[in-house]
Amino acid sequence: MQAEVYVYEQDGKVQGFAGMTGNYLAGIFVEKKSRFLGIGKLLLAYIKKVYPVFSLHVYRKNQPAVHFYRREGLSFAGEGIEEHTGEAEYTMVWNKNGC
Picture 1 (cartoon, one colour):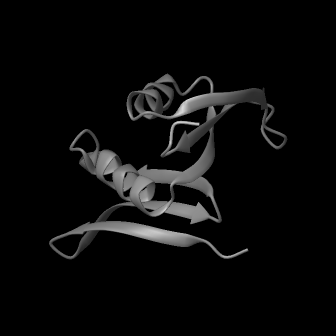
Picture 2 (spheres, helix red, strand yellow):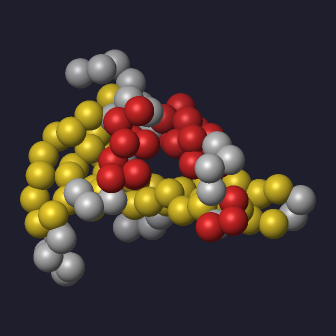
C-alpha cells in the first residue's frame, strides 16, 4: 500500500512531515530543532481535516506523544505489544463525529 506524505516546509526547508497509509497515521516527525513550534499540531490538524477517521499506534513509554494526541482529541482504542520491538503501545483513534 502506498503512503501519502504531508510536508511542512518553511523557507525551502522541510521541518516536519506526516505519513498516512490508508486511514492509519504512520507517524508525525518534526525536525529536532523545530519541535515545540506548533508544527506537529499543524500537521495533525491537516490530517484531521483530510481524514475524518484514522488510527495510530504510539509507544506507551512515549508519554509526550501520548499527551499530545490526547490533547488533540484522539481516544484510546486498545493496548498491546508491538511485534518487532516488544514495546507496549496504545492504539489511538480520531473520529471527526466523536463516535
